[in-house]
Structure formats: structure tokens, C-alpha cells
Amino acid sequence: MTAAVAAAALALLTVLVVRAGGPFAVDRAALEWAIGHRPDAARLFATAVTHTGSGPVPYAMVLAAGCWAGRPTPRPLLWAAGFLAALLTGQLLRFLLMAAVARPRPPEAEWALHASHHAFPSGHTATAATAAGLVVAALLIRAGGRTGAVTAAAACLALWATAVGVSRVHLGVHWATDVLGGWLFAAAWLGTLALWWRHRRPAGAPAPPTG
Image (cartoon, rainbow, N blue to C red):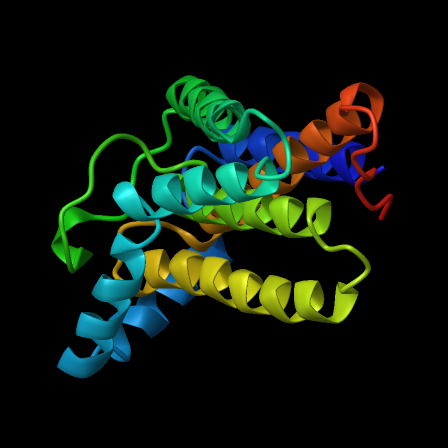
């Protein structure tokens, strides 16, 4: 259900972005607000946060989560490879969507740091949200009934993924709807992975939640 709703919302947003041919009013308003509220301390903090949404951080998180999820089995490294493959496959699909839409970024004069490729959906946003979801999946696999700890960890991971997305707008390198697209993409991909796990999970491994 989650995958279908997120995929439908992403498809609708993608069509709107393509048809608009430019930023929406909400995109311009968010960018103008960010430019007007970008003191040095906030810019430095947003830059630090945004760098955690790409590069080694999300990949290390996913590898460690996969290895930990598979620790009770004889092949934890295989689990780690599977988790990494899930992230990389999502990255490939997102890149293909980004290339197909080819949405320009905000004007370069508004950027607070360098950015590359097209804008929609936001890569840092999608990467962070997907990595956060995969770590939560590993926690659920190993929860053993300790759902309170999983809930607390999931809340922290969701806060991090949200902060990465917001930082992209604050730094002027993405429109707000690029970030929304990144979140929707991650939700659709994670929902798809959950469906796959429900039908192909190893014997004895728990099913993911059905939300």
C-alpha cells in the first residue's frame, strides 16, 4: 500500500514538474526565504548536514546495518551486500528519473555550495531517506520484540533524513519540490523492497510492517 501511494504521488509530481517547465510558486517562495535566512552559522550547519546525505556516510550506514541484520546467520557479509545493492539499485533508478526529467536547478548565483547534475528528484534527499529506511529495516529484523528502541531510532533517523532534505533548499541547490520528490522516491522504493522481503524473506525472518 505504501509503495503504491508513494509511487502514484511521485508520478503525479513528476508530470506536474515536466508540464510546468519551471519552478512553482512554492519553490520560489522557499528559495527566497532560504536566501533571506542564511547567516554564516546556519549555512555552515546546513553544509555539514547536507554532506552526510551523500558520499561515505549513507553507504557505511547501510553496510553496517545489513551486516548487523545478518549477524545471526552464517553469511552476514552477504546480507550487507544485499542491503548495499538495495541502496545502489535505488540510486540507479533515481538517476534515470532525474536524467529523464532534466529539471534545472535554482540559479547558480543562489547556491551556497557546488552542485552537479539535474535537480529532480533530489539525490541527497533520496539517498538519506533510503539509507534511513534500510537501517530501520535492519533494526526491525533484529528487534526481538524491542519495538520501543526501534521507534526511538527510527525517529532519529527520520529527523536526520528530513534535515538533509531541508538543507538542500536552505543552501539554494534544490527547489522544494525536488526535495519532496526525493522523499516520495525513497518511500516508493522502500515500500517496494518491503513487498519483496515479505514474499522472499529467509525462513524465520520477520515480515516488515504493513503500514
